[in-house]
Image (cartoon, rainbow, N blue to C red; front, side, top):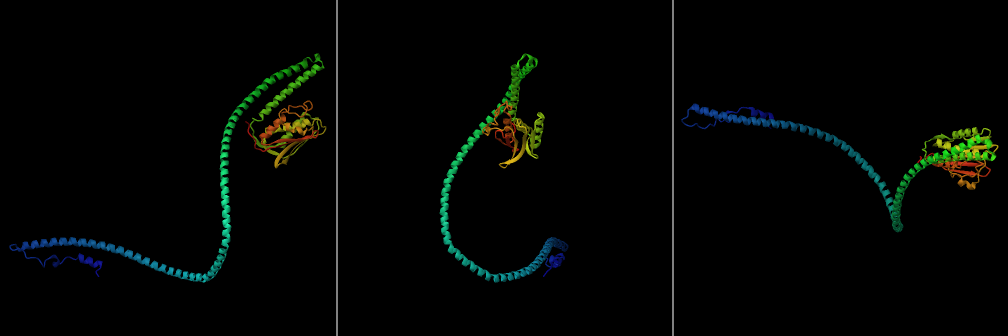
Length: 420
C-alpha cells in the first residue's frame, strides 16, 4: 500500500528518457540537418517537460490537500475512539443499574402476590358497592327530581328578582333625582343661612339700640327724679329696666343658638372633669354665701370641641345651680356611666326638678317649665345644649320628678359635624 510520502517522492523525481520520449522519437524529415533536427527534438522535449511539470505541480497540490484532509480525518477518528471509550464506560454503569433494576423487579414480583390478594379483596368490595349502587341510583333519581323542582322554583324566583331589580333601578333613578334636588336645596339652605345670619346680626343691632336707650332713660329717671316719683313709679321703672335687660339677654341667647349650628368644630381629647370644675368655681364666685357641694368625677375624657363643651357645662351646671337655689344644702354632681353599651355622662342635682310629663318640651327654644319670677331665664339654654350634643353625634335626655331634683344624661360619639 502506497503511503502519502512515497507518492510525494514519485512526484518529485525527474522524468527519465523514456518518459520524455527519447526512445520513441520519429524519424526526422529528410533534408534537414542533424543539428536542426536535434534542436527541434529538444524543444519538443522541453515543452513536454514543462507540461509534465505543471501536471506534477497540480498533483502535488492535490496530494497536500489530501494530506490535510487525512490529518482532519485522523483527529475525528481519535475523537470517535474517545467517544467509544466513554460509551463503553457508560455501558458498564448501565449494566450495573440494569442488574439493580432486575433485583427491584424481583422484589416487585414478590410484592405482587400480596397486591393480588388485596386486589381480590378490593374486587369483592367493588361487588358489594355495585350491589349498593342500585339503591343509590334510586336515591339519585329522587334527588334529580327534587333538583328539577328546585330549578322550576328558581325560575320563578329569577323572574321575581328581575322584577325586583327593575323596581330597584327605578328607586335608584328616583333617589338620584331626589339627591339632585337635595343638593339644590342644600345650596339654597347655605345661602339662606348666610342671609339669616346677616339678618340676625342686623336685627340684634337694631333691637339693642332702642333697648339701651330705654334702659338708659329709665336709669336716668331713677337717679335724677327718684324723689319726684312715688313707689309705683319707681317700681314701673325697675320693671322696664328688668324687661329691657331680659330682652337683651334673650337676643344674646338667640344669636348664640343660631351660631351653634354654623361654628366650625375643632375636636381634641378633652378632660371633661376639668371643665366642670372650672365652671363650678365660677358659679361659687357669683354667690359665695351659698352652701353647695360639687361632686365631680375624675378621669372622664372625650374627643370633643372644648369651646362648645364648655357652653354645655355652663348651661347644665348653671341650671343645676339655679334650681337648687332654694335648698339649704345643695348637691350638684357630674359623672359617667354606661347606657346601651355607650359611654354616658350626667349632671345631677337635688333641686326643684320638673314634671316628667313635659320632658319632651324641655329642649325646645323658649320653652320653660317654671315661672320666670321663681327661676329667671330665657328658655334657650337647653336648646343650645341639645344642638351642641347633636353636632358631636350624641343625644341628651332628662329624668326628674317635682321636688326631687333632675338628672341630665348625654352621650358623645367623638365624630362631630362641621358647621354649615
